[in-house]
Length: 323
Image 1: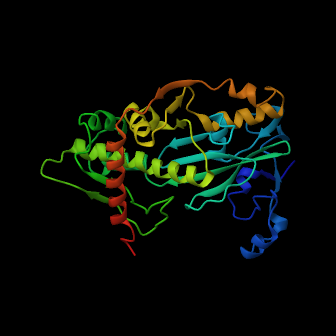
Image 2: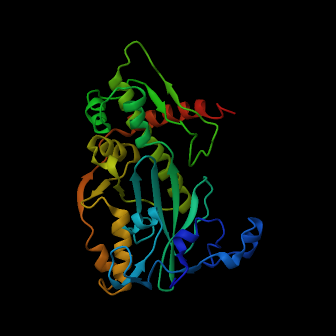
Image 3: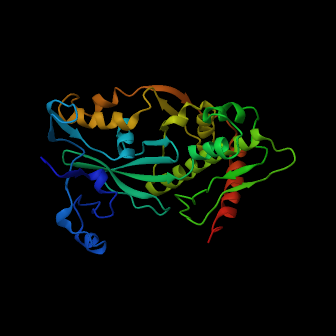
């Protein structure tokens, strides 16, 4: 009962907050018929906001000092503190965020403009794109087709062939997210021949994850007018070195995996630590970030461009299928 608050990053996801002012927007609240008086106060992401009161096994007096949305916290945990820095989280879906600086960037490619975090009086912004099916496509190979016993087995199976043999999977099982935004799209598995094997389908599944993330990254750099020097990655699928190398090859930028992949929890801890003075500034936090592995682009660009063209042709065939 000490405080009824939410931070700017979470508030920005409600469709009720004005991104520029950081306050609840009266016109939006009226539009969605949400009484403004019931909403929490909007606070910075890093500030001492309340203290624990000895419930749920916690002692009294621990400051509650860091609040951030899931992907915003992961961006912070990846130490993406400068505009042009980007991270991608590989989970059931993919969530790619690009830091865009002190002003919101308006997307012309179906991406989401969002607050990244607020520290003190300074608000930072990001662009976000979401892929609906990434790890879930691998789970489909496991549970739906029975091609693998464990999700981790996809790396060995996909790595047993040099490429997908012309097979393309568009895992639009629940439609397509950014930048296509088509809820009526459905999955497509195309390019099959008598020579197609389970390994080719597995490879096409990894291709699909990579090309969906690449679509987001290309849309973001176009919207922000930015050049991304590297893509920092986290999430369970980053253990798949084949997938990470494929991402570097397709996107044409180094892919960097951190030593600590629990970046959401890490980002929340960093925000709290800054608020209580455990770390003095962002430079001190950034110095704690460590790379575990770096994957450099190594594939001929003509091969990559041909694969991207094949991917986009397959995507077009998936669109509007279930209308």
